[in-house]
Image (cartoon, rainbow, N blue to C red; front, side):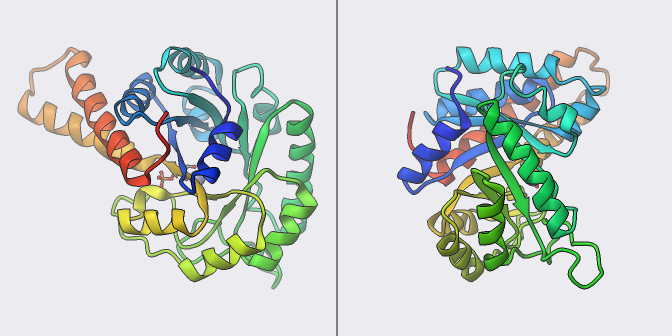
Length: 285
Ligand code: G3H
Ligand code: ZN
């Protein structure tokens, strides 16, 4: 059934585990995430990034409607989350499209501008019943430099700054920069667990790990023990998808029916989802 991200994060926090939030791009992603969650008997979040909406010609609804239908029919609770939103026009479509939560991404901006933009997004989100996550990366622009992308490998979130940011913005959850980076194709990220411990002690909202595809299993479980409550995963699914299609077509250069390679791609993604959920040790549905 369709549920809310806020509920899944609350339940994960109570169980000292984390809810996995997978980026979906195609219908096969949607089906694979739901099938993987069902086989692991675990709730899950389907997240659509602003980039994925751009890939769909700027249209949110076709993929969102498919995701909502899959969630409603799923044997486990499934929530819909809008990811890395920079465009207010997209934020404003979230509720009607069936999303219970958004991640508002103004982390590219200097601190004061990030705070002002995030606070405005929080006000809108809360007025419309949405759970909202935001992001704080490197101490931004303090030395006349633009801030590092929050998920550049060197970026780090400062605990004191994060405490002020959460208090002043009113966000429901915070994405923190502790050593992961987006779009890694090797699982070689080393997380700053000492910093995560300080962030967890300084903040009373759930913490979110982005760029989790590049984080090894042991680092992931340690991060969850250290206070990460939502784990965002995108690239790992695309590695599985593309690898399966590449292998399938290499063996069958004459193939034309997409159902052949999309079937193996979907199965590969399903295995990745199920394996990831077991690693996270999320509460069973
Ligand atoms: O918001 C999405 C995640 O941060 C995905 O990152 O593709 O590196 O796993 P990833
Ligand atoms: Zn991300």
